[in-house]
Length: 264
Image (cartoon, rainbow, N blue to C red):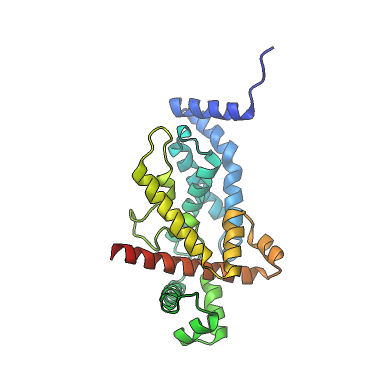
């Protein structure tokens, strides 16, 4: 009696066969096998979006990301498909949202002003500015600043990979997915670039205020939803969204400044 193949061996064999033959029926099997990833990612992202954004639309965008991941995935790199696919699915959903221009221009303008203010004040003060200091710099009351942050927090939906060095133009910046090293042909230059990106992003996260750093850690590294983070920290979901938005604005501002310092 032949020993039964393990699930991992079955999956590896399925990938080898698909990459070799590109049969449509095999691709359909891959889509069915990994479709729960799309629902998981779309569900998590929906938690931080306005109610007018339909989760079915997110799933539709995400399926495109899954198809792209299946086509571009290289099993020989030794990276789990789930890890690779989740990033691609998130990216496709973000691209879909951007293409529909779901964020009003007034909110985008507020986000730019906040990001610039956080970056300039942190550079001048040598520490993260307080909410009161940011409000004074923008000529707002604390209540008005809170209102801005709540609006902007809905547009701060990113993956950490998207941060790179701030808002890079298409084709610029460092994309960690493109820096996954082939174990059979390691490129020392790319490895050094990847290590620099990880180091700079890690340093930027370490300098966040405690609550914002915890939200980033729980959301991006622990995979918790906004609701779960709110329960863990004993705060409301709206407060968690606000903390997440402020953290992303600080990170964008800090990394953008580092980019200009490196270029200059």
